[in-house]
Image 1 (tube, rainbow over the protein chains, first blue to last red):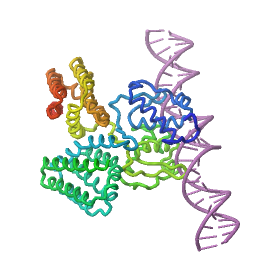
Image 2 (tube, chains in turn cyan, yellow, brown, green):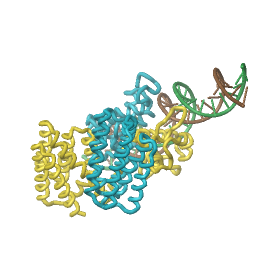
Image 3 (spheres, rainbow over the protein chains, first blue to last red):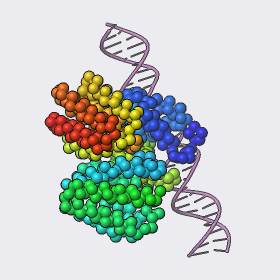
Image 4 (tube, protein in one colour):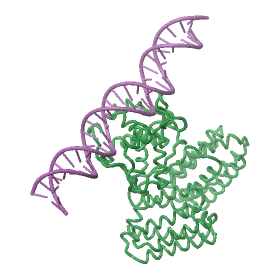
Length: 234
Length: 234
DNA sequence: GGTGATAAATTTGTTAGACAGGTTCGATGC
DNA sequence: GCATCGAACCTGTCTAACAAATTTATCACC
């Protein structure tokens, strides 16, 4: 970034790059917890940027819990137990990356279905039904269909009554949204929609019947089917 | 924050508060995706702060993927699929909160053990063994013991060969660290260390034997035991 | 009235300087 | 050695200016 006095290509923002640099060094252990970062002034000299840019970068990693600052003293690397942010890269890199994220999501989707079957209220159930109906009604399988599909999963996570499931599953769904969309836009086969909807219907039925194990099983089969259908594309 | 020209009590930093305000409004849907935030200038007037503080706040939510900015145009609320950050609160609020996070962690720990048993290398196994030995050697059950315990779980997640497991499980472990420490400092019973270590040994043995189902079962029993031991304290 | 080019206004990105508030360190006195 | 004070240092905030990019308004021409 010392090469240019304005926004550089790539990530674009100087503050972005400095935050990434600092974050990567902290996460890699290059700065042990408790150690003091270089001062804003020396960082601005090191990177050849203004103090404002350094402050914006530090503000970012501060909000992630990676560092704490003490006015008059300095900025210190925080202990890993204070980290409050789990971050994904800007986009999923390749097919292996997608599968790895699916692999993380899978046990959570099963548990989500299980808990939803155990705990859902009539209200939760109505919302799951509506999400299911929206999926049936979706005219564009790659756009509305993807959103409706993720909404179905999200309503199930909401029915767990555990806010962490609701939030984290929504987060994972968002991260996978474009991947799922791309996979579907390449698959013109109309029976895929039908299969997916019938798989969802099985999950919904198990949740209606308050049967956790059936819900988890139906979800497991759905995800396996979805993975296979997606693999057929790669 | 218009009440004071310096850092305010509570969260302390003006940029913190504005970032939280904006973030909360975006997450709640008050600003639909694609909509343009007020300009930096008008936000600085609205909150009675300098443009620098507003920029620091926006820099934060930008790095979370909540907004994107276009020079000369404005700052726009991003689509939820671009979010790249999953955040926890600064600390776990109460026992119910802790249980909810344990509930999220549980299926992941089981899957982690399963995958580790299936995929571990000799190197992974050696590191798991070392983490296990460190736990046996720990003289302070509430300090070193907690760190060694979490390290054991972390090495298992590393043995999945899936970076998302390694990262997210470390993140969850970090978030629970202080809670586990507090729970242990109140329990002076020496047999708890012994039980925990023997539960870990069962997990380790299953991973050694490349037996995914035994590993998951041993992990399940360990987590249930840990939850009960922790509930005895509350 | 419509279109295209240009200028002006607007907005984000960055730099620089100043001041406020808090911390650390060194010097001094007891 | 300990307590106090002042200076130096460092983060938090504010202000002003300029650079770069975008949007809007104006003008000339058809």
